[in-house]
Image (cartoon, rainbow, N blue to C red; front, top):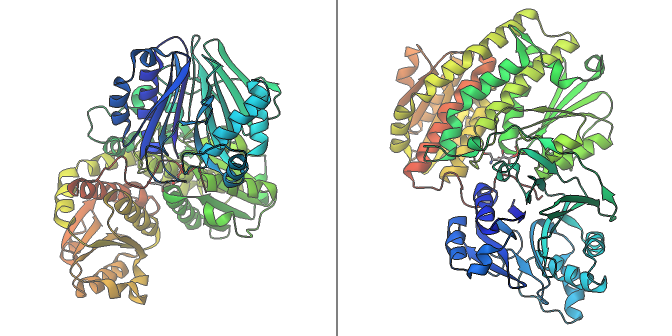
Length: 615
Ligand code: AGP
């Protein structure tokens, strides 16, 4: 949720920390802060607003601060305590000995605060984080300045989720970290140590990263990294090489990351298909290596995820179902799966999909499934992420870093891999025909060019966004393979344009929602030329009869559809199961240009953060 950056080296820390925060600003952006050393003290600067405003404030700090060779920074997505400068991180203990930043939620903060206040310690913020800070200062004093012992005792007391990054006033050049439940990655480039919430913040310095495990601590210094368990015992750790290019996380000449990332989708699909197929065959077994014969024993497959990743799993379900009607498939949002009594065990395969690999609900759901003996696979975009490390098998999606809060190219990476995974699993099960395999692989191979042709319709779609952006809301309707896209289209419209948007299976409209329609609610109808075309067109006619302006996505050459809508976007024909690969692009562009017309903050929409590492 929040972004953390820490540096201990020989260069001025302030610029490194500001740059690291700017790269992670999509994780949280309501306030920001930094702590630097000056004359034996730790000096903090905080602002309510964006990292660029923090950079302005830092420039006004005393020159000694700007020379500080270590420091920590934070960009916040508020959970406990309002968005104020006081509640912004870093937080400082009353005795000024400890300064720290935190990502996560300290669940027993009230209890700790009550205890410390009764001992005379005065709290100055409304955050849960301050309890950890004040407690650590007390423990540090009690341990006679033994940082490792104080950290061990602190982690014993705290409950909840936390990534903590800490400076002690009397330990110049040292930074301490602890991780439980919230991600933290560290690195040493030979002369300086770094830590961050997100690997993209470290790629300008090194690609060799050490991800902290659950219940692990680290000490950063210019001489290197040292790792410990929460019990205080030292640990060895190997770095993981992340082959992402730091340029991939740059906006280039684009106005928004989202626009750049939408445009990368044909490449993401091409890369994925090239990596996992041979001519007309799926070759995913190389990267998945499930126990031999497993698929013959599997009776049910579960797909579990949140948000856009969940909609990607709906696409996977539809493809799987269309190819094999016998296998029991369940698709569930992780936030529900974790609290329901979902059947698991050795005859069940669960596929957890998470772009970040850090979504708290998805991680919890995976832990529950594992405890039931379910075979667990993850699809994630981030090597070394928590889900990658916790499940039996991970298949990495090849989307590269995604910075825009609204997921676009990672959705494409997910549905590409999921389609291949589904085919691989059914092949192992013996239920995928050679003709279906060849048909779908060749459909996927020809898809990037088709996607490119839809991206080239941007001007047309922008004009439609300008026309409809004054609507009081949108209804996205479609049937079967279009239903997941109605959800994704509506989510994009909600999260970046802030317009009320509903997604409905077209046949369900007349069971209630149609009552909402009038001339101010725009219907976006997804009507590819399949066996369901006529039925969907009837549903569209019902909406138009209620005066709703209608914008339709239809297949190239379907001239008959033209008269059935107020406006129409023609897109290339595909295999029916593969419609989501092409249909999602105009929906993303429509939301993007609607948000732009309304002057929204597209890459950092209000109230959101890129990864949701709290429940
Ligand atoms: C998508 O645009 C959203 N930002 C959000 O729904 C996201 O897909 C969801 O939070 C899941 O994230 P994950 O894939 O990192 O687990």
